Image (cartoon, rainbow, N blue to C red):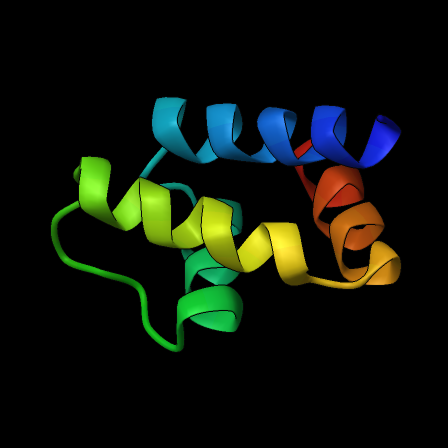
Amino acid sequence: MEHKKNISAIVRFVTEHPESNVSRRIYRETLGEAPAQINSEVIKQLQDKLEIADEFTIEGYNYLIR
Protein backbone atom coordinates (compact mmCIF):
# COMPACT_ATOMS: atom_id res chain seq x y z
CA MET A 1 0.00 0.00 0.00
CA GLU A 2 2.76 2.43 0.94
CA HIS A 3 4.58 1.51 -2.28
CA LYS A 4 1.59 2.61 -4.40
CA LYS A 5 1.22 5.86 -2.42
CA ASN A 6 4.88 6.66 -2.98
CA ILE A 7 4.58 5.94 -6.71
CA SER A 8 1.52 8.19 -6.91
CA ALA A 9 3.42 10.98 -5.15
CA ILE A 10 6.35 10.63 -7.57
CA VAL A 11 4.08 10.65 -10.63
CA ARG A 12 2.19 13.66 -9.28
CA PHE A 13 5.46 15.54 -8.69
CA VAL A 14 6.89 14.90 -12.15
CA THR A 15 3.54 15.83 -13.71
CA GLU A 16 3.39 19.12 -11.81
CA HIS A 17 7.12 19.92 -12.23
CA PRO A 18 8.15 18.35 -15.56
CA GLU A 19 11.17 20.61 -16.12
CA SER A 20 12.70 20.36 -12.64
CA ASN A 21 16.10 18.75 -12.25
CA VAL A 22 14.58 16.08 -10.01
CA SER A 23 11.90 15.20 -12.56
CA ARG A 24 14.44 15.03 -15.36
CA ARG A 25 16.66 12.79 -13.23
CA ILE A 26 13.75 10.45 -12.48
CA TYR A 27 12.87 10.28 -16.19
CA ARG A 28 16.49 9.63 -17.20
CA GLU A 29 17.03 6.90 -14.63
CA THR A 30 13.66 5.24 -15.18
CA LEU A 31 13.11 5.62 -18.93
CA GLY A 32 16.70 6.01 -20.10
CA GLU A 33 16.19 9.60 -21.24
CA ALA A 34 14.49 12.83 -20.27
CA PRO A 35 11.79 13.26 -22.93
CA ALA A 36 11.49 16.65 -24.61
CA GLN A 37 7.69 16.49 -24.42
CA ILE A 38 5.86 15.16 -21.37
CA ASN A 39 2.48 13.69 -22.25
CA SER A 40 0.12 11.03 -20.92
CA GLU A 41 2.00 8.27 -22.76
CA VAL A 42 5.29 9.21 -21.10
CA ILE A 43 3.60 9.44 -17.70
CA LYS A 44 2.10 5.97 -18.22
CA GLN A 45 5.52 4.55 -19.18
CA LEU A 46 7.03 6.12 -16.08
CA GLN A 47 4.31 4.72 -13.84
CA ASP A 48 4.71 1.24 -15.34
CA LYS A 49 8.47 1.32 -14.73
CA LEU A 50 8.04 2.60 -11.18
CA GLU A 51 5.60 -0.20 -10.38
CA ILE A 52 8.28 -2.80 -11.11
CA ALA A 53 11.11 -0.83 -9.47
CA ASP A 54 12.54 -2.04 -6.20
CA GLU A 55 11.61 -0.53 -2.86
CA PHE A 56 14.94 1.28 -2.47
CA THR A 57 14.56 3.06 -5.81
CA ILE A 58 11.07 4.26 -4.91
CA GLU A 59 12.24 5.42 -1.48
CA GLY A 60 15.12 7.30 -3.09
CA TYR A 61 12.87 9.11 -5.55
CA ASN A 62 10.38 9.84 -2.80
CA TYR A 63 13.19 11.42 -0.77
CA LEU A 64 14.20 13.58 -3.75
CA ILE A 65 10.72 15.01 -4.27
CA ARG A 66 10.27 16.09 -0.65
